[in-house]
Length: 322
Image (cartoon, rainbow, N blue to C red; front, side):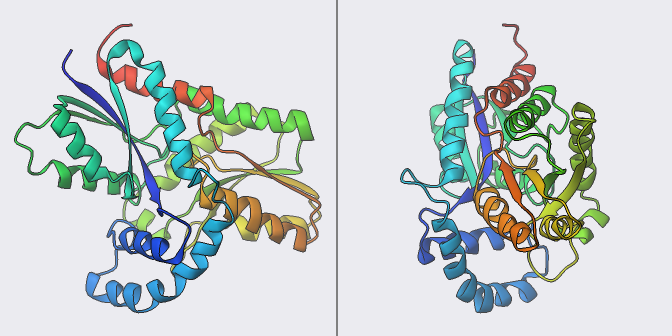
């Protein structure tokens, strides 16, 4: 069989939870026009003149609160996903590689390694279950840039998203089932997705609709639960998708909800936005507003059902029968 590779791609992470590393990471991330689409003449002076002078120190402290002895949670979870999928695909001879849009392992560097290896078929799996131009679109841009000078282009399969993949929904449902079995049904279950500016959706990004697909499928799995869809991680002054997770958490506590649980269906791996923003910051907001029990339900990470999802997605596109 021609040399075939599967490229898993996630957002990225700083090399270390220190100010210098975080500044370097944020400079790369926030310079991406897919993430911040303002004119460069307008945005770059703000980025370099204000944001990169102030934000890295604060962000480094947040990263320190979730960093492990083995390193970045996002990278560790990504490596586990890579290893688990590689084991599942042993019979195919396929090589599974992990890359990040920002930071290391760098997308372009990993593609160059595959080029040197002699890859002829490449299946790209963005680790974002719901498409957004800010995430999956950025991976597409990175691919096109890296492949632009290859004379021997591989056959390329790009998986846009998989918000309704049965094994993905099953992985989320299993997490929720396990929580309810241990803690009982919460007053509210929040499905918290990363937000985007409303303007992006108005201009054609179908991310809200892709999130809604996942939300409806989870609601079908748990008709007995009161489930709310919310959005987190707002950045800047533009209006973002609503309702905001942290506003909802505060409002529920003020309205008398004593026990709430939050799961993040848009995050395939636990990272700063789940382990710090949801599990710490939102928990604190809930308790300060009078709530009694806040629980963050872990991301799918390397849950066997999620590895089933990745395996299913890849095998469907390998055009082989196993």
